[in-house]
Amino acid sequence: MNRLVITLVLGALLLAPCGCAAPPAEGLEGKSEKELLRAFGAELPDERLAAAKAMAKKGPEVVPKLIEALKHKDWRVRRSATDALADLKAGAKPAMPALTEALKDKDAWVRAGAAVALGSIGADAKVAAPALAEAAVDGDLWVRKCALESLARGNVTDDKELLLKAAVGAMAIRESGWAAKRFAMDILNRHGKDYKPAIPALLRVLEAPPEGMWDGTPRVVELLAGMGAAGKAVPYLIELLKPERRTVPRKAAEALGKLGGPAAPALPALRTLAEKAVDKGAREAAKKAIEQIEAAMKK
Image (cartoon, rainbow, N blue to C red; front, side, top):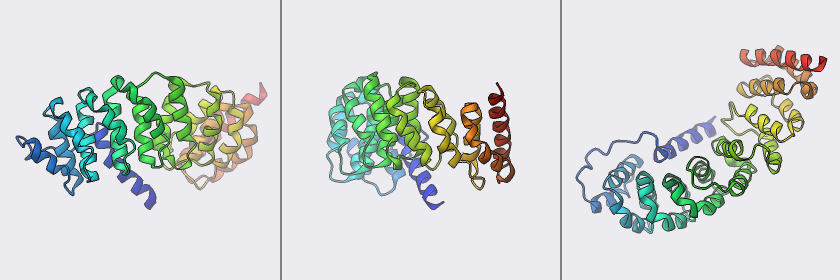
């Protein structure tokens, strides 16, 4: 539970520069660029983010100073610079080389911020797509998440092979977490529903579902079905049917029901789930899956 709470808190901190609500820049209106840059190194994240937003409001003319800030010795200043550039969106295009270099920063928060900023630039950041693809398999899970989100939603590139390899590479890393893997699956849904090299990575997701994967199981199975590998998912789904768990067994049961006849080996586990699941939704899903599988077997 503690690990999940920490993950959610870290996610909230990272979401603000991705476009969610951020603290108002109270008291920063009219501040000079020099004063705002000093605030980039503030101890409190809210103050840094407010300063970054206030700097971005000054327009693209501040980009040269933000590029310089990306070289600052303090990681907080470097991260704040990426946040300001993310707010500038396409106006941050001149900073692309510096942001691409920042994807290799020694600090993971700076690398994550650089990935977000490049994604916010959009199609103009196409030249940075290979670097974002490399960041999708970064050693830090939040860097992977931000890189994949930029590739999936930032319209940075239409290079399907690059996108698919980045998605599969990230999914193959067990520690990526559901936040990253759902963006990888978005890429697969859009560009590679029949991309068979993704099969082992998708099965690995079922083998060790990341925390937060509440509604992801049917999506994984749907992708496997499109790749002609739905049957391979059955043993993994059976393992997810443990009645003491909550949401995951329900989603696993729903996925098995949709598979029909090929899911017959799961019937004993589904019957146990229908009787003993602590969650009413899981019991109902198991009963429905049993009906669907048995009906398919009679055809």
